[in-house]
Length: 320
Image (cartoon, rainbow, N blue to C red; front, side):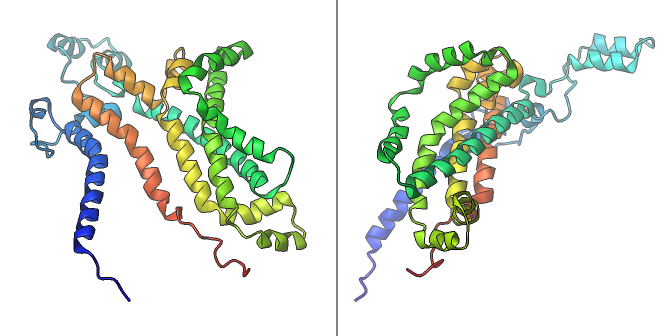
């Protein structure tokens, strides 16, 4: 007997979903609206700007360069000084240009992308091997080790900050820019590896073991099974873990602000945003534009590969 659909419950459920969706999207809509408004339009409560302003995005992305602030005396000097070369004139004008030097988004973006990608890749590779050993191999102390990897989450990042900094400083890694980046990547791997092991370990247990037995009969070893059986059947879970690790490393601020303090050229986007907020260039449209440019890459990454976030790829692979 098919139960009659309850219209009241369906309506309440729909309203609840819409409320949650509005709560999640409201900050992004507000950021986008304010980033596209001119200063005289900031008091407008409407989300739609009276006139679209793209100057903040052009400045942050270093597209073009406004010379409207060049004093008239400097313009006359440049026009009436034939002895000045083109290179010298460009050097003088560059001091008055409003460009991405205010917030070098592309440099910060490249730094964040490098650190987040390497940390995520290393974390995923290690978690694949560790999760397979937890889910398939039997060895003494497996349960203790499996539960112990989550022990790191019992301590907050603030408590670990000073000990980790002293360890890396004593090792000499913080004396060079490359060593500092390596230290930061190691920290991000340590932060994301426990959850990665937990997520992949649970997924690997859903893969029928008889598939591996058949592969062993064909002569495959453990590493061959992982590469040719486990990884293809778990690509959805692996992509999910990679996105999780990437987002953690992309948005992390506390460790990056301490470790990269002496290397301004290695700043990541969260640190760059902080420096922009407290600088003389902290204008609302520029701040909101920088925030949107920081959030967009993660959104694009998630939407571009969300088709891979489907489970059950091993279903039907073998008959039990």
